[in-house]
Image (tube, rainbow, N blue to C red; front, side):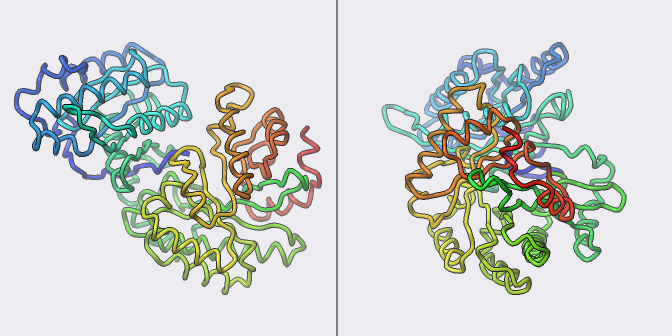
Length: 457
C-alpha cells in the first residue's frame, strides 16, 4: 500500500507551484542537461494531459543535498549530479517520460500510460531504489537521498498545476517520514473539498462521541484450512459524511497531533474484541493491529500495549502488531529496544508490506520478529508476472530460513492461492476469503465456514 495520503494543504519548502528556488539563468539551460525548463514542462504537461486520455502519474522528486553539493563544489558539480539523476530516471521510466528541472533540487515528471494505482506504487518504489547507488562527481562517489510525492490523473484532476500541488503536499509528507521515501496523494471521494476545514475539529471529537469503529478482515492458516485471526481496520462513522476509510483522515490526525490517541483507542478496541470472540466460543481467533510510524516512534507504544492487554484481559499471544519496514528502519537501535520489550511481553510481531522497502536480511536477523507479510503488489501478479512470482518465492524461502511465518495479503484468485500453497506460505488474506466486515459479520463468517481454502480450490 501507498505511504499516507495528504488531505490538507501542507506548507513545506515551497510556497506555491512554480516558485521553487533556482539559481538565476536557469531557464532553457536545463535542456542541455536532458531536462526541459520549468516553463516548458508546465506547457508540455498541460498539452499532454489534455490530448491523452490515459492515466498519468505526476511526480515531484527532491534530491536532498544537491544544492549543498553545488554550494561547496560549484554549480558545475551540481549540474553533473542533476544530469546523472535525469539519466537514471529515464533508464527506469523510459523515454516517454516528460522530465523537467523545476528548481535547483526539484525534478518534475509526467509519466503517461500508468495502468492504475498499483503500477504507480511500483514505479515510485523503482525510482527510490534507482537512487540508492552512488553518483559520481569528478571521480568521487556522492550519495543523494530523495523525497518523492506523486498524484494520479485523471483520478486527482487533469490540471497540471493542481496535480503538482497535490504531489508537493505528498512530497512534504514523505520528507517528514525520513530519507528516501515517497508518498502518493490519494484524495478521499467521500469528503467534499468544502468539508475539509471542519474535518479536523470533527476528528478531535470523534473518540469522545463514539464515532470510531473497527472492521475486520480474516487471515487464514493454509495448513489448518481455517481463519486464525483478523486484521483490525479503522473506520470513522462521520455524522454527515458517512463511513470514512483511514485514507480520508489519518494524515489529518497526524498533522493535528491526534494519531497517538486514535492509535491507543484502536489497541484497546481490538484487544477487547479479540477477548470477546474468545468468550463467545472462537478461542483460536487473534487480532492484528497496524502501528503507525508516529505512534511507534513516539516512545509510549509499549505502555499503550500493556494497558490495552490489561484492560481487556487478552493474552499477549493473541495480539499481533504489524509494523512497516520504513518504520523500524527510522531509528534502528530505538526500534530494536521497543520490539524486544514487546516480544518479552509475548506479543506477536510482524513486518507489514515486506518487499516494498529495505527488505534487508541484516535487519531481519537483528529484530525479534515472528512473521513477514508479503505486499499485495507482488501477490496480485502471481500467474501474470514471473518476476513477481520469483520475488514471492524468495521471500517465503527467506522467511523459512529465518524461522519466520509468512502471510500473503491481497489474495483474490484460486490461482494465487494454489501458488502460495505450493510454495509453503503459512497464512493468506484477501477478498478470496472475505472483505473487511464488522465484528459481528466476521463472527458469523467464521462460524459459517469450516475448511475455507478447500472450498475455494
